[in-house]
Image (cartoon, rainbow over all chains, first blue to last red; front, side, top):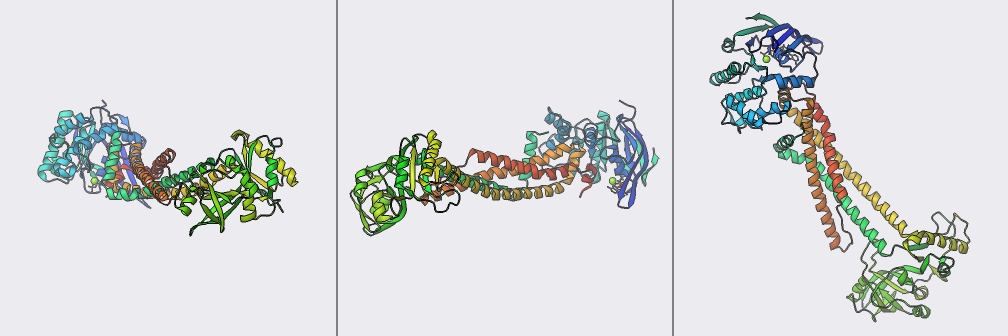
Length: 226
Length: 407
Ligand SMILES: Nc1ncnc2c1ncn2[C@@H]1O[C@H](COP(=O)(O)OP(=O)(O)OP(=O)(O)O)[C@@H](O)[C@H]1O
Ligand SMILES: [Mg+2]
């Protein structure tokens, strides 16, 4: 395992809106060690989600270099990025993003299908759901689950392929404080038990307070890292 | 990632909006139904015609007046022409010759009357055309010589005139008002298309010439020739042609007669039904096309509706081809289902057509062929693939970030 799980160097992301150029990121460098937990904070529009999409290999930077787990990913093809995502990255979204017509089990199995896991999917999905305290909700569909439970299904889905990093963009944004707290506990437990690197994007100082490291973005640049 | 799971997922997604799926496949259902139905009826018609032609005998040739091109003043065919063809030295491949006069005449009996195809025939007609009698006897040499007023009638004719299909020998019917004694009854040969072969009447050639169909001396409308076997039909054809050319003194290339073989009739009939089937099939094909466009339309809507789902799938590792397969599975499943329902519909249609034909005494049995079923299945799957390709490609090419942000 390399020294840095996230090794981003001068990441720039520029969107062209017709004539106007929107500078979402203006040269962000970020290094994260395996097993670290950090929060990315900053006002709306400061580029948090943009940065997270780059870290999660959902998108490519306009310029700059990015190594994930020692692997240079800045100029991989779409399908190669998809493969990296399926092996190394887990996502937890603010709006859960579960497949509405599928059971919790099927939702958790999904990343394994795309990763080409042929055997033991059901078994592993069941274990992942048990790990987030949903062992008794395997066959429930999202609309039969509370918001907190849905987000826990999403966490199970994020961890089922044993990724190097789990990225959570406002994971508690749609939850009340109690279930938000529960979700945070499961995510942090993931880090403690499996040593998974965790990156939060959040507005909530309370969440940030539970992570050792806080990175502040302003207008596409890192203004604080402690 | 073509797995059973893929298939179930597609099935699940399609059944989540049953009405929409049903309406979408309607175009395919109608298209395939029409193709299957039309091809079945076409095949049925083809069978009927082929059966009728073959039932007359496969080694028959028909000589008619007039060339294939415009020949001025074609000489009529005569009894002497027929006799010349019957000469075993000039035409060794020929075993039987039957000159025929032909017309549609009115038959009546005790107030009942009907029109029937009527033939003036010689005694050889019987063996040349494979005619079988269920009772009585056929026109004999004596009848010809004596210009006897006798007739052999078909079973349908008997039914219409006399109200029965047996025991009619000895009755006297009227042809064009003149009394004829029934001496024989034909067995049923079934069929329609070329006129009902069971509604016919045969009288001696000489009687027909003088009393029913005056044509001028020794003229006949057609000469039927029987070759010794189906294999000798081509040589018989050549022999007849050379005899008639000599007798009519026509230069080669401007024959004033035409020899048709069974083969010619079969080919012509095949061409006609083939063209008809193709034409109607083309129209049906257009409705398949329309159905395909319907599928494309709905798949595009579906891709838009499920943009976020696609984004999510990509975020958790789906490659382009995974998404492509997912949507292609859906669209081909959709049109394949339409195709199968369409096959059932077409089958039902052909059964209905068959029932109607049977009820109206038309000899037509539509037959759904394995070919057409396979073709329809293949075609509908292909339509789904083809028209699903563009929407699926659209889905596969979505940027994950954009797709996830989609509201
Ligand atoms: N696809 C895009 N096209 C054009 N501009 C974009 C696009 N995505 C993001 N931006 C712009 O980039 C900047 C950073 O956006 P980003 O979504 O990263 O902000 P954020 O920090 O996540 O904000 P929030 O806290 O509201 O989620 C914004 O000004 C936004 O308008
Ligand atoms: Mg954001």
